[in-house]
Length: 454
Image 1 (tube, rainbow, N blue to C red):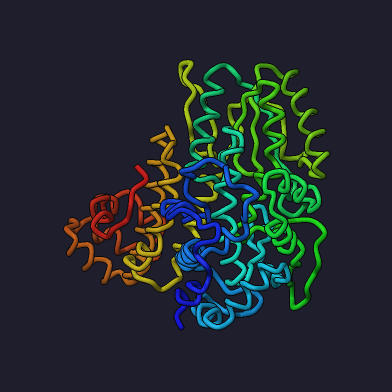
Image 2 (image 1 turned 135 degrees about the horizontal axis):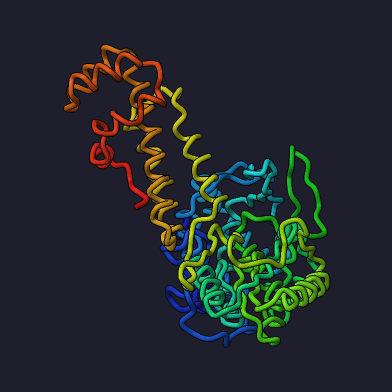
């Protein structure tokens, strides 16, 4: 029996979700559902049956396979889980319908951050990612239309660039003081009882609420030991971003009710006001509202300050002749350089083509994300710096002076230039500048497939 045939055993008639309503959008990297084609009607009428409907489960399985990802605590990867579910799915589905299904703990993974700390991820098993994705595809349709228009994170049809553009417009309109709020360890401090209470107001289905509660209580495995959690919804599962928006939406609504200008992306919220005093009042308001949710503001990273120079989603704003412009933040530039250094270590023993093949996906992704930047000169300098490193790698690969001389001549260098570079064959970084730029040109790297930022 194939995986699809196993899922075919799910009755398609009960609460069937319309075709393509729950499938994740192909242009979004996170587990998000498509924009709803219908309103939120249907909430409370067999939502769990809609989740487990055949077409919805098939779409969820396709999404999980497309996202790939590592195995959970059971050690089963996607292919192995597919084999397992061929015979196990009918039993799992029955447990889900009866409310007796118990998710496995998530596997703790620590992702290093540039400041030396770690971001904690919790990787569910592939089976649990499948069930969470199926939940997401239905719940997103019911809940997303109720969220604030100022919320941009992890929502279908919305991206970080929308939040950046909204922030720029607020500042352009004269709201040039920002209340920049950073929540301390947000995903680790989500209160389960408060979250479930907020979710129950939006989804009137006891089976769904019970299942979400089971996922919150599943615990996390670290070093072979399962740690129970009374709070937190670890990042790594498809459902966590939606639950975060459910919890934070009431703060959005409070800001809207008071007529504030703001943009929020997940737990990153910026409110724009006209004066320092107004900003301090908003900060006090937010502290009270977040305190009611048992969330804490990181005092060291939060501030009421000028909107110019403050980082928001990797961007910062600057002013030119009364026009507000967008730029890549200095911190984002530093992270870019750090990552390029890691990927272009000259002792790696790889050819220049192999290095560029490794760089290409990262550089293209970075370029796409920062495509809103209006600082061409900054991007041009980053381009020049990357090519400088690549030239040094090429010289290191040629290594010996005689080889450098021969290869440079073959590339059309003048004998005088080739000899000058070859004589200083061990000075990789110095040699990879100035005269060599006219030999290993921009066109040379274009032919090797190295993308440009400008």
